[in-house]
Amino acid sequence: MGAAFLMANSSIGPGFLTQTTVFTQQLLTSFGFVILVSVLLDIGAQLNTWRVLTISEMRAQDLANQLLPGLGFFLTAIVVLGGFAFNIGNIAGCGLGMNVLFGWSFEKGAMISCGIALVLFWVKETGKMLDGFTKILGTLKIGLTLFIAWAAHPPLVKALEHTILPEHISYVAIITIVGGTVGGYITFSGAHRLLDAGIKGKDSIKEVNRSAISGIIISTIMRFILFLAVVGVAMHHPVLDANNPAGSVFQLAAGDFGYRIFGVVLWSAAISSVVGAAYTSVSFFKTFHSSFQKNERWWISIFIILSTVIFVSIGKPKQLLLFAGAVNGFILPVALGIILIAATRKTLMKNYQHPVWMQVSGWLVVAVMGGMSVLALLHYQF
Image (cartoon, rainbow, N blue to C red; front, side):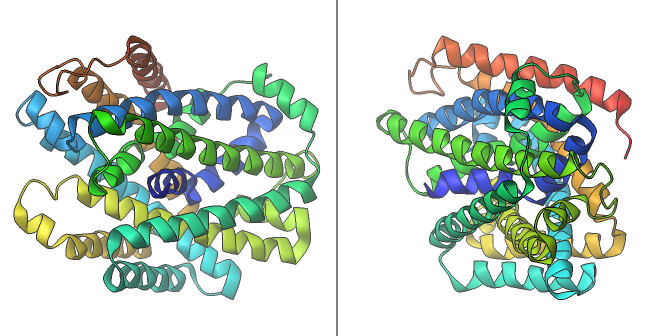
């Protein structure tokens, strides 16, 4: 469950709050279709990744290097780059959350949150801290957002209808949401956590499947609850605050109290994603040399501090959150393709036969995300 919540929290960070609000405002009830597509692609990506990595008993970078020398270094480079882009957005979310709760500047809120994240890694055993911290914040986010969804009175029947038969389809929305919820480092966060916890090998398949499915269910519940909250508000208030669209949804739904709830939800989403992004990104290169493993906390600290420094220098939190999702959407088909090719090598997989239906679903995700990445790249405006 710790791995499930780590993946789910990473996928419903501040980027998803902002992305959902921006695109729901454009697509209204048809955004439900975007979430449905993202969940289906999520299943194809996560089940394949978790199963292949835990049975091979290797982290993604090591498996890739075994498949083709040097490929693991390439995979590490693109995933860490995407994780870094995401973490800058996560720090931006921390700054926004603190601004809502205490009126502090975005920069001050980001720096204080950076300090809190560092303390979390240095005062506790990392694995136990991650498991407990992500469970608490994940449950808190879902509960508070459910209250806002109830207060917003969304058109449930229409939302359900357009989730299946949308009136409008946006490739940019799909690539950004999928990238923000399963792209880049997020694909590997839960699997790497399981490996660190010693859950691996053929005998652990049931545990791995249960953990992956639990993570997908948790993140899916949060995605639809947030969508219903936003669409309920957007149907009555088509113009939201351009600088803080997600915050205005909570405020319009439940007044100043709702706005404070947004601050709690946003900061919780952001700080848990900062922790998840830093932990998973560093897990990609800590096996390359013993010094990385030995000094893991220092590398995690450097990762978080650099992300904070860049955000404080650049600003533009909303644009950063949207851009991070798109970047990670481009990474997903490349990373998943490597995993699926490795799954066909029996020597790497310890004579395990990967199910055909999982291979087909995985390659379908690669094809769909690869195609939409090209379309989104042609139309995306930062």
